[in-house]
Length: 203
Ligand code: HEM
Ligand code: HEM
Image 1 (cartoon, rainbow, N blue to C red):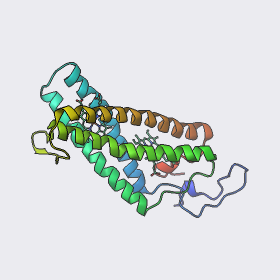
Image 2 (tube, rainbow, N blue to C red):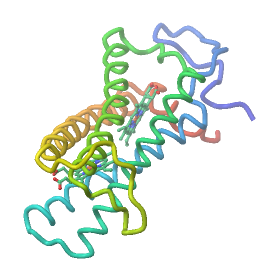
Image 3 (cartoon, protein in one colour):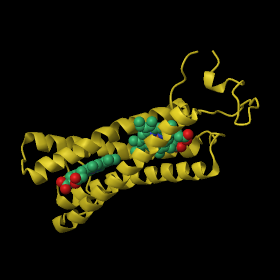
C-alpha cells in the first residue's frame, strides 16, 4: 500500500505538483527513538521535581522518596544511553530533508532547537550522574550502584545539582517551544512537519 505521505499529488506552496523521491518521513527507528525519549523525559521531569520537593523541602526521606530517587536516576541514566544510541543512528541514517514549506528562519530555528535539545539530553543526565557521584548516592533501589564519575565531594555536588536543575529547566522551556512549533505546523500551517514524526496513517 502506498504511503499516503508520499502521494505524488501533494501540492507545494505555489500549487504545483511535487513528486518526492527521497524519503520525507523519519524512519520507524528514528520515530521510535524520538517517542521513547519523550516518554522518559515526560516522566523524569515531574518525578525529579516531586522527589526533590518531598526530600529537600518537606524533609521526608522515607522509602517512597528514596524509591523515586532511584527510579529517576535509573530512568535518566537510560535516557543518556538511548540518546547516545540515537545520535549514532542519526549520523549513520541522516534524517529527511527539511520540509519544503519551511521558511529559512524556521529551518534555522528548528535546527537550533533540535541540536540544543540533543545537547541538553546529554548534559542534563550527565550533570545528574556527576551530582550523585560527588554526593555519594549512586545506589539504585539498593540493588546495584551506577559507576562513579567522580570521587565524593558533597560541597561540589551542590554545583552539579544546581546545573542539573538550571539546564533541566532550560530543556523544559525548549520542549514547550518545540511542541508549540509542531502543533502550529500541524494545525495552522497544515504541513507535513508533525506527520513525518508519526507512523503513516491509512487512507
Ligand atoms: C534527561 C534526563 C533527566 C531529566 C530531564 C532530569 C530532570 C530533573 C529535574 C527536573 C529535577 C528537579 C530539579 C530540582 O528541583 O532540583 C531533577 C533532580 C534530580 N535529578 Fe535529574 N534528570 C535527568 C537525569 C538524571 C540522572 C541521569 C540522574 C542521576 C544518575 C539524576 C539525578 C537527579 C537528582 C539526584 C536530583 C535531585 C537533586 C537534589 O536533590 O537536589 N537526574 N532531575
Ligand atoms: C508532544 C511532544 C513532542 C512532539 C509533538 C514532537 C514533535 C517532533 C517533530 C514533528 C519532529 C520533527 C521535526 C522535523 O524535523 O520536521 C521532532 C524532532 C525532534 N524532537 Fe520532538 N516532539 C515532542 C517532544 C520532544 C521532546 C520531549 C524532546 C526532547 C527532550 C524532543 C526532541 C526532538 C529532537 C532532538 C528532534 C530532532 C530529530 C532529528 O532530526 O534528529 N521532542 N519532534
